[in-house]
Image (cartoon, rainbow, N blue to C red; front, side, top):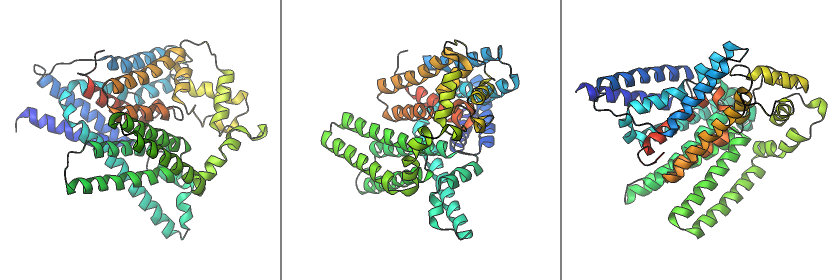
Length: 413
């Protein structure tokens, strides 16, 4: 085996390992990313005469994000937190650089997507079986399986979070759906293949439900609706699509009304978020934290408060409004708000542009899997500060870079 083939195989293996460890094993994932970067650099240097780097506008977004973060260090008071933020966001630069150095990996896009989907599904299946074992071992009732806190605590035990794991599962569902429509298998094997993926989709749907994340159940509903509308547009099968939307709406209504732990969370949403007495508003609820930030933040800030001062400023806002529990415990739980606190209007416009550009590329390239991915991450950013944690940064920039590599030759920037 020649050196080029050997390095390409090593890069591919490392990419598979990186993508399957995104849902968990954050520390291992970090070491794998570093190894992948080093091997990619070696590959590019050794074969640079045959490799040509062609950038697109996309690559300016992570560069701009990093430059803004570095600029934010100049006026931040908490330099330690600022440098820690930059450390967590190194993937924003690492993945675009890696995919620039190893463009041959473009042909492996489908395999990488499937690897992620099966990894997320396998993790959740293991997690589900582990929870069943705990219930059996402690002689608890099966209803414990559907308690929100149960899944939240177990997800943390595996180094992840139920909201992020739900987002991974939703993306996996979209990948499985896309595989059914694009699979080239014919005859009886096609029906077996479709049945296999339908079982995966149905089980993943169940997993999202039992994770009891309201935001991601809403996200799942949005993505499935988007998929049906795309199907209607592409296949021109209006009647089937219309009936599918009706079935989806009725299914969502039935699930929310009849799955007790989920109905409880939605039924109490209004009262939890908006009708609590003032003395009970201690900061656990997002709405009151967002309201506090809105009431106290400088709405004309161009550069924000600095890369490392987000939590410090949020604490000061919470303290003014007596949101005691939120102090030093809760971030903004919204990436758009977090970006504004850190970098003002400059940061907010950068993040919004980042998402809009990807919507533009996915529509122009007619890649509806990519479109749904951007829909997932932009929706996730409404409820989580996705650039404050590695499990958000790696997920967003790995697949954003992979999809942009896939469509780089098709899109004129």
